[in-house]
Amino acid sequence: DSGLVVVGASHAGVQLAAAAREYGYPGPITLIGDEPDAPYQRPPLSKGFLAGKTSEPDLALRSDAFFAETGITLRPGTRAAAIDRAARRLHLADGTFLPYGHLALTTGARARPLPASFGEPPGGVLVLRDLADARRLREAAATARDVVVLGGGFIGLEVAAALASPAPDSPERRVTLAEGRPRLLARSASPELAEHVAARHRAAGVALHLGTAVDAIEQRDGRLAAVRLTDGTRLPADLLVVGIGVIPNTELAEAAGLACLDGIVVDRHARTEDPHILAAGDCTAHPSEFAGATIRLESIQNAQDQARTAAATIVGRAQPHIALPWFWSDQLGMKLQMAGLLDGTDRTVRREKPGGDGSDAKFSLWHFAGERLRAVETVNLPAEHMLSRRLLALADGPTPAQAADPGFDLRRLLK
Ligand code: FAD
Image (cartoon, rainbow, N blue to C red; front, top):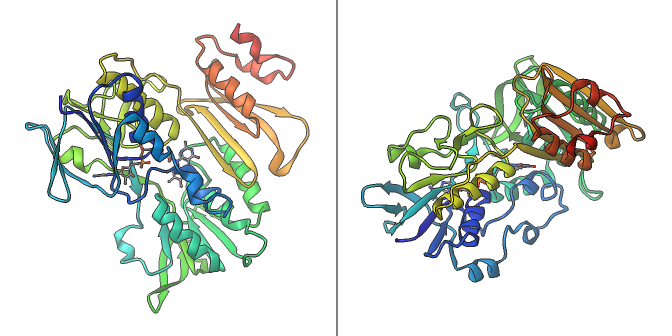
């Protein structure tokens, strides 16, 4: 066996390499990543790091000692260029190659740029996906007065939140967020939660323009000057952050002839159609037991759970990937947590916890498809989020009536 080669040194890749070793993989493990930095945590980039509360050393995903102790060869700044499946070789951009026994693709996703019809973006137009983006954004934000955020998904909202609450010694900024759809978080949260989030952003001074897309970008001397929206609004801007989703990095797999469908197609054991090649994380389209469909998820939970599944497959103790999807976001003092999937839900029950309003409001939204619990969103209720994950895994979870009854102790159902 020529060992395990993992392409993509981020949440899925690091977890996969670590789990393979933990499960007893005996051969060499090489983890390559095209970013120059050692593996780091992505979620804080739009939260504490952008707000200036988290520093770079705090972002490290694992220590140098971890890689040394586990015998995982980490090669940052190394890009995979092509897979030769017949010879089982991974060709690198520097012209060399690595032989492999197993190859794991954890290539993730990249930020979706503005459509090409807008032309070459001027200085001051940024995206946020990796640490290099985050450094650029933090630097630009330090002097920006008029910030426009494009996209009302989690990344756009977290960026707006971080920039709308400036550190005491930084300049006042005007933050505007434009979203093409009529509401925030249309892809990932319920209308009720989106409404609460919108109210908090407005209260924090973020101007929301919903149902309007960017029509044109005005520039002066190669720098961003203003953003014109389709509703006719002209927003003077010295910083535009584009948060309009991601594109999965499937090119390497596609060029090698592996099936791709908005993600590298894998089975419930994280295997591609090539028995020597697996994939995990944001780059995969995988069957979800919970959704009853093939889906692609963008979350730490999925990256880590699927990576463990792939590692188990590699060491020959296949365990199917049947994890419950969950996600979190921190913005404007709110801890938002979601478990399950909203697709197909037709009924929502709200549970309120007394005390607190504004950013410390505490409530949860229980979403059902008929009588069956399918998703739970919590605001500032981490213990209830953890409980909801256990309840969602039950065949006999709470009914809408039980969830709606504040006197009903939901923990009773776990016994
Ligand atoms: P990625 O993290 O995208 O890593 C893939 C890596 O592979 C990258 O380093 C890439 O450069 C590298 N690569 C790609 N192609 C090649 C190649 N050919 N050769 C070598 N290397 C290659 N999720 C949550 O659950 N909660 C959050 O609060 C949250 N916040 C987020 C905030 C931000 C700003 C961002 C950007 C994401 C956030 N996410 C959050 C999503 C989460 O970070 C992703 O789901 C997770 O990073 C996916 O991990 P991954 O390893 O699959 O892919």
